[in-house]
Length: 357
Ligand code: 2U9
Image (cartoon, rainbow, N blue to C red; front, side, top):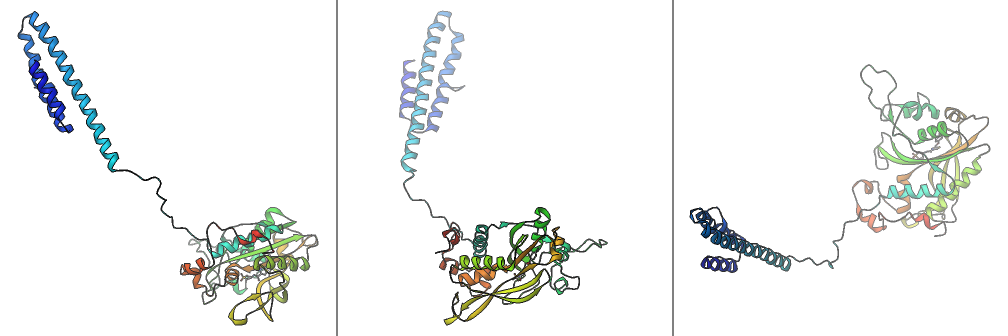
C-alpha cells in the first residue's frame, strides 16, 4: 500500500502536462486502474481484513485523487501565467485613426441656405419626389401645351397597361411641395422647399438630377419690396459680403406675375469671381409675385392674400461660393477640392457665425 502511495504521488509530482496527468489517473483510479483492482479483491477477504484494507484503500484513493486535482489546478494556473506573459496588450497605445467622411458641398449649401432663411422666419417644407401632374404642372398654372410637359423634357413614370390616368412625373421643381404646404397650412405662410428635382437635360452645365431651393411668403400685403429685402439679406449672408447689390429684370414664369430674374453685381477680373463689386452682373435666381391662379390652386383666396416666390439652383450656388469649376467635380468623387476647402462632416455651416464674418 505504501509502495503504491509513493509510486503515484511521485508520478503526479513529476508530471508537466495534463495528458500525462490523465494517464496517471487512469492507471491508478480508472476502471482497470491499480487501486480499483485492489478494491475488487476486497470481496475475497475476511470481514476483518476487508475492514482495515478497505479503509486504507479509500484513504489512498482520496489522497491520489486530491493530488491529481491539485496538480491539474497548478498546471492550469501555470498555463494561464504563460499565456499572460506572452499575450499582453498595451492599453496605452493610441487608437487607430478612422477615415473621416466629408460633407458634400451641395448638402453643406442646403444647410447654409436653410439656416439663413430660418433666421428670417421661413420653415422648411418637404414633399414627394414622384408627383402627380396636377401638383407639378396644373396647380402651377403650367398649361397642358407648355414645353415642360413634353415627353422629352420631363421624366414620366409608366402606368400599367389599360390605366389611362395621367402618368406621375419625377418632380421638375420643388414648387409642388409649396402647393401641398399651402393646402395643408393655409395663409399666412412662409416656407422654403429645398430638394432634388429632375429634368431631361444633360450637357456641360446641366444634369438630369439637380437641387433647388424655392421659397414663398404669403400675407395680406406682402410685396416685391419684401422680396427684394429678403433676397438681399440672403445674398449678404450666403456670400458673406455686406455690400451686395441686386438687379431685377422683367421676365416670365407661368406661376408668378409679375416675374423677375435677379442678377447680382460681381466682377470676374483675373478669372476669379468677386461678389458685390465690379461692373458685371450674374443671374442667380428667378422670382415674382405668386400668380392668383396658383394661390387659388393652393386653396388661398387671391382677393385676400398675396405673396412672393423665388427659386434657385443649389448646385450652381455651391459652385459659385466654393469656386468649383466644373459639374464633374460633383460626380467623379474628386476629394481634392473638398479637402482644399476644408469640408468636414463635423463642420457647422459657416453662417452660424453670423453676417459679419
Ligand atoms: C409656388 C409658386 C411659385 C418659384 C419660382 C423661379 C421663379 C425660377 C429657377 C431658378 C433656377 C429654377 O433651378 S432653376 O432652374 N426658378 O426662376 N422659381 S419663381 O415660384 C413658385 C414656387 C411655388 C407655389
